[in-house]
Amino acid sequence: MTAALLNPPDTRDTLGSQCRDTAARARAASEVLVGLSTAAKNAWLLSAAAALEAHSAEVLEANARDVAAAPGFGLNAAAVDRLKLTPARIKAAADGLRQVAALPDPVGEVREGGLRPNGLQVLKVGVPIGVVFFIYESRPNVTVDAAGLCVKSGNAVILRGGKEAIHSNTAIHRVLSAELAKCGLPTDAVQLVATTDREAVGHFLRMPEFVDLAIPRGGKGLIERVVAEARMPVMKHFDGNCHVYVDAAADLDMAERIVVNAKCARPGVCNAAESLLVHAAVAGTFLPKIGTALAARGVEVRGCDATRELLPAAKPATDADHRAEFLDLIISVKVVETLDAAVSHINEYGSKHTDAIVTRDIAAARRFAQRVDAAAVVVNASTRFNDGFELGLGAEIGISTDKFHARGPCGLRELTTYKYVVTGDGQVRE
Image (cartoon, one colour):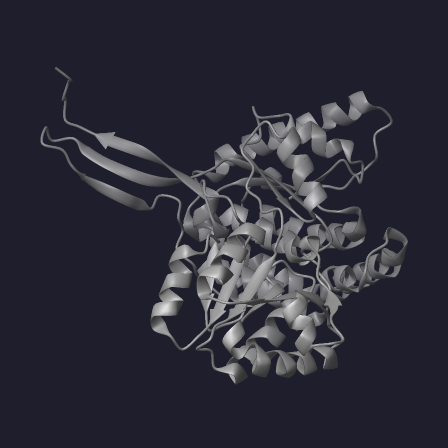
């Protein structure tokens, strides 16, 4: 694993040539990775996990420098929480690598197959995408996840983390880099772009001859820039405006637990709830109950007129509030007359990320799951479960709200495509 662009270039031409060299080396590494055995890739994953834990003190020291500098970048409390590493989070990242090692290898997997009447054997076989350019912001544990997922799925990856986490990412990179060579994997399989020059991103996005897929993970501004400039496919989600709908047939104690967890556990992540919809039949009972619980945790409520009648301390909600991804202890609340009204509101204002219903009515749950247009629909559980680890994928490289070629948490299988392998015995087409 090599660090690319460690020294800031003096000119734009130099930066462009260095980016091109990095991308070309990634392409060469990808051609080696495609032929590696599962055992070789797993050996690196396990070795990298052990190395990360063994050097956690170095990583935490580097992370402390980033956290100390965070106010200078204007990071709010939720963003600092995403940036901060702890011994538990480092252990979780290492365990994520071990979990990826334990997962089936999608490369070489026969996904469909059969024998044609003329004797041709036709197999649909999983293959790597090739080279992934991954751009992300202030979550240094993502460096570990992305490296592990890309290597296991046979892809070379170019990692471009945010300036807020530069010391953390460099330390993680340094810890993991030695393990590639030790395990016989190409050192250019994972490269870290260590310059904070934003122009580097543009250079990589203009190299479809080397980069097969761009994955931005961060704020809406970053993702919009990548979508606008990329000359290769982009896997992304713009917002995480996730809803919890409390149905007329909801268990209200369950609904309180779910809403509090979805909103308050980690408000700065994309699967946190930002909007609450409550059926009018239970609003009079549930809203005072959940209002007290949210207020105790410092959550600001922005509600519709019906909500404010029941929660006088709530601020009036605007149209923009219903569309917002707050990433903070703020939630929009609306009282709806029917399940269909809830679905219509979600499909209009939501971001197609994660939406949940709390109900004991099986028919209502089925109707909600069928009609809500989201990457994940959750019944009687927190939106926070839309996560690769929680859904059994191991680590994830992101959550996609696209419909092609992957949707929801993107793990190993979503980092592969397929090709047809056709085997005959001398057949020719008449």
